[in-house]
Length: 376
Image 1 (cartoon, helix red, strand yellow):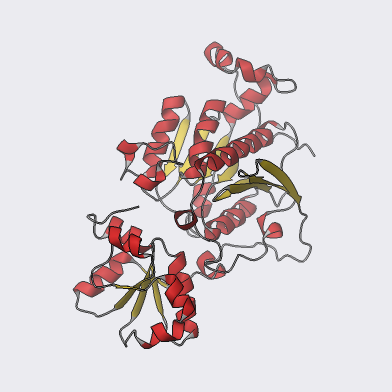
Image 2: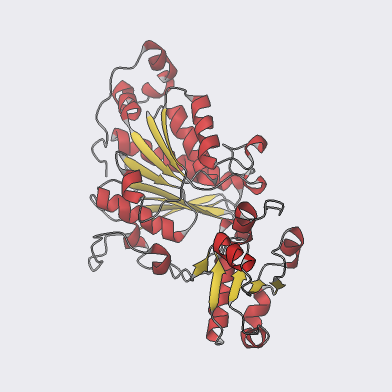
């Protein structure tokens, strides 16, 4: 069902801009009014990774007037195949900086607002303030629920995308108009049951496909053109070359969203210790048992000195046996980014041993503590 345009008409376009968008404005039912709405639109993009790399150039080239970018990460070598707004010269650079430069290269007149931080319950309201809609390209469930809830409280729509290995999904969440993310996913998946992109991988072309669909949804919402994906999800399987649609409705029993919560706790994310805190406590002479649950090839690339390599499969096969050998020092579990460590901690906790996960894993340790370690 078509919806009214989300954004009001902007000023008349200059002759140069009118010529630039001539192939768009000649579309039936689109015209110059739609292009003026696009130029007047303010869209926030959460994540400058694989999906953000498809979304941001698409928005800039289409003529969106104001683009916000929120991401607290830095560019790594392993990002480059799918995160195409960043290049080799950007490795180590804040993602919002290289992404903003890519937008400016496409259209220097686009207003770019950057937020070099991860979205949290504390900053979400301020970050979303002043935007007409959000495009969520985040790669973790706590952020997806946070974006949904913050946008619901702000009364604005969220176009969300997700990629996993050879497939992806895209949908629209807008509680003010229809179903939202929590109607489709009332509860998050069990911690560790869905591997992150860093662990499972993602085909670069899937990011491009899902990102393009997200830009299309944003365009339809802003201009009031076509039927938006409200109450529908597109599911893409690149190996089969297929698309299918899943419909869903509002959950009449769902609790109202009245405020932002602890989304790590909601998603069952384990207790953590930051690399900075662990490093400081080690330097102060405290003893820890640091268990690295990555694979041997990963430990060959980089490891924390003194850590014990016990791959996750070993922990899962015999958690009691591993627990017996850990000693009495406080336990810190490490993986690449965190999810595997959470699965290991859950297994060891069932065997009677409790501990914490190193927040951000070995990647965060390499970034914040020991820059000589490889980031992969």
